[in-house]
Amino acid sequence: MRTIPDVTKGSADHYAQSTARPYPPERSGVDHCFGCSPSNDKGLRLEFFRHDDGTIETRHQTAGHHCGFDNVIHGGIQAVILDEVMGVAAQSSLPTKAPDLACATAEMRLTYLRPAFTADEVIGRAWVVAVAGRDIHVKAVLLSSDMVELTTAESRWRQMGTEPS
Image 1: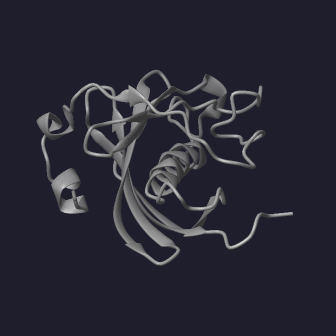
Image 2: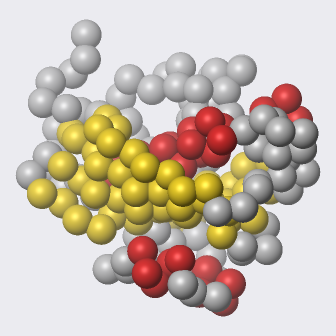
């Protein structure tokens, strides 16, 4: 299993992985999700892909109106992209016989390393580092299109015990 030192200290070649396969998440309760729902006209409509090593990936060309500082992707939008890709990674770690209950973000920490520009496509990648009961620990990175690290993230997810009402 990869760890964050492998990611944050690696060269751009570290990120050159095999072609990822489409990975449509099968999650309940996300029909209107701002990040991933294809039916939310005002959302990001993120699509996901899975690499052979289990890494989940999404690519996104951010709209100009999602800037914070001129021409820089707002930190909140970066957080949404990373939260979504980490959520899909967490959900993908569940056993196939697990009940169809969503995983929810319990904690998330981001480190903004350099600006992410609205003119460039960004790549979010996430992988599970540990599972302890219903807690799933995930790490992620937001990369520029030339594989430069922009933002890193760590999170703890919790599989819900019951379906939200």
